[in-house]
Length: 390
Image (cartoon, helix red, strand yellow):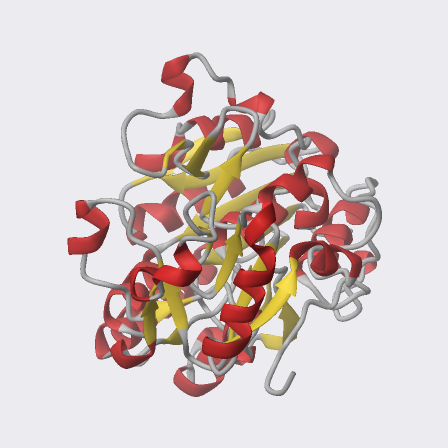
């Protein structure tokens, strides 16, 4: 497969970054530490701040970041996880393990336990409505992985946008950390500073900013609005680091994934492929760039033949089980739930192609995203590692 970037779980991914952080606090995740940031480079800091800028790809930073404080302190690159998407990668930041263990595999996930395709982070049915907890389904029946916050001995803070700070997922995954919500970029950095200055104790602070990702989806990665927002983040970051001088803080800035643009002519629609659609027992799950296909047992040959004949120009076809065997999702023993959440087959889209499956009028009428992630291009998979000491 040409032009493909896969996760490096042996010392070069965000999973390994979390292992380095865990070991610096005297804990372990099972994964090796990050080669370019070993635990002894973190251990002496009183405040360890993990600042996640959703959607900030390494190549984007190198291209757009000339003169920025982020590029000034850039020490290298890492891979995300597979698939490189928020649901999988942010959950890795919040558990310390790969999707192989936490089993969150994309924005849309089939939950066998309750017989529904979900939007997993809002924890609601894909078609909309109330969170599944409103129907008496506790999130811990779906998600059983221990929070990273609960694995380490320190004072802990989880800084998240106000609209999701107390969601079912956030409350579950925050463990015993103190949640600090914010409303804009200014209050985001104020909350980080508040956490740093809250005491003289050793701390771990996880702070998540989603704005760049949202703009990139809507307007495309190269749009001026995205570049303007990136520069705004960098400007406020430069001001922020001046205000925490002398606090013995290690600021680790990175991302969950990057993005790539999909021109409208390369956005495929499942409804245009009825012979493929009739093979499926569920709507497509996962992401537009990595689609999990649940196929009727009697129609597997028809499905394979159709994809090989009509879609091989656009995507790679895998048996989903083979992705587990090839360690796409991580190392070590897989979560038993993983097998149910990746379908029978997976379509991994090439270059800048993507596939969408609209299940209702709202999805059909919605303007499609220009920026996408979840695929195996370098732009999506490779993220920066930025280290600032104060």
